[in-house]
Amino acid sequence: MELTPEELVAEFRDAVTELYFARKRIAILEAENAVLRARLTEQAEEPADATV
Image 1 (cartoon, rainbow, N blue to C red):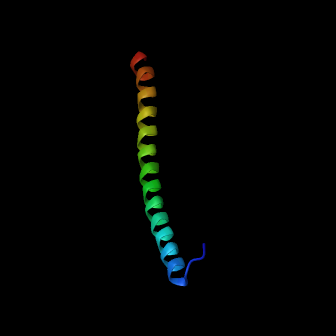
Image 2 (spheres, rainbow, N blue to C red):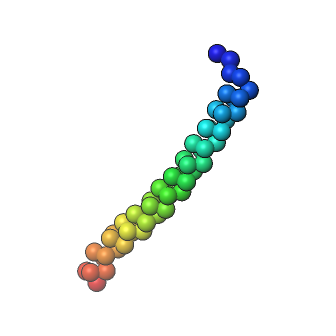
Image 3 (tube, rainbow, N blue to C red):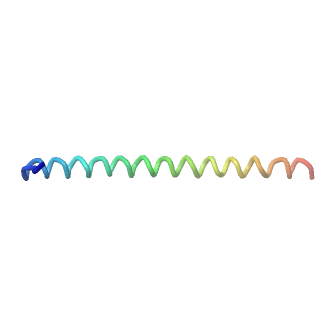
């Protein structure tokens, strides 16, 4: 299957747009992950603090 130059440009733009939103989603997920890791760390430390 051969694409015309216009179709190639359209496919490229679609791919760039998908990549842009994927990177935004990755950044959001990384931030959520950091929050959850911090919360887990706090919960893991709480029982140790409570017994002292």
